[in-house]
Image 1 (tube, each protein chain N blue to C red):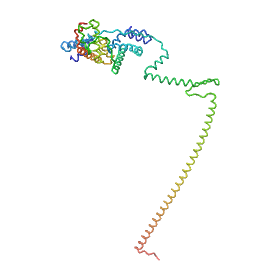
Image 2 (image 1 turned 90 degrees about the vertical axis):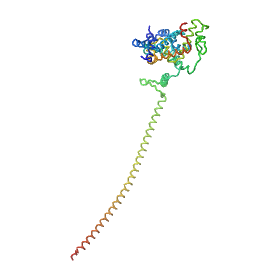
Image 3 (image 1 turned 45 degrees about the horizontal axis):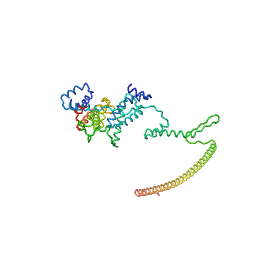
Length: 222
Length: 200
């Protein structure tokens, strides 16, 4: 065993926590190593010296008692402490819940109508009974106006479609007329070309026939 | 009644179980904090805060079997926080034991002086405690913590390792270097150990 390996075992020896399996080899090393033996003695002396510092008496005996805490006080202590993430995570949902409940309670409405209870609770304030009919009339008027507006919009839309269609048809007609004229001109030019070609061939054929007649000395019978 | 049983009882609403725990642990925790912090006044405040914190938070301890390491860990963290705070805002402490260390520069040369004005055993004890306290405060914090846990609290290395969250070998190694560092400081203060031990 080397001096470095013995280091932690020396501590075990100082505090009587030596492992029975390794202790003999450590003791054996100590017998042969003056340095480690001296270190062990020094540490034992230091530990002995430290043990001279005895425990002081505790300053006072604390006694804890159950003390009922009022809800207001606990709420006060909750808000008086440091602002922590945990507190925020509790406080924000609690405030939102309170706000929700407050608004709902403020807009709570219950009435008995037709043998049945009608209970409503909402975040937004609801209409009172007096203004309900006026509101219905308003809604109907708005509904009527909306229908008229929609009909007008439909008519305008149809008219616009019709105009678009007519414009498109006129444009198509013009395009077809132009195309027809172009086609006729092309046919005329083709026919003219064909006529010229045919005429040229006839003239050429006549010339060749005349040459042939001249060569053969053919004379038309009288 | 074991600590575990007391914790379980307190978690079930028995306040007297907590008072018993306090009565049982107050002295140990106070001395634990005192030796790590090195100042009695601060240790007293921290000890009080420790039990208040324990009262509030011990219900969070899921395994009552592990309450003792939990207590040491909480107290240790409070000590560390306090020391960190002191490093930022250093405080000048008055000596806990006036007259216990009158030598200039904090040495202990007068310890063996036969013409010392306080030759009684008590005075000598006070001097020794002052020297040890000063020496302990001079070594690194992590070594001091282990010396206090082992030497004064008598914890096993496995328990210390559990509290500190380190391996057993690391704990032993820190203690080894801590004791050696302490020895060097004591020797550098010219502490005549033979005379000292003889006089004790």
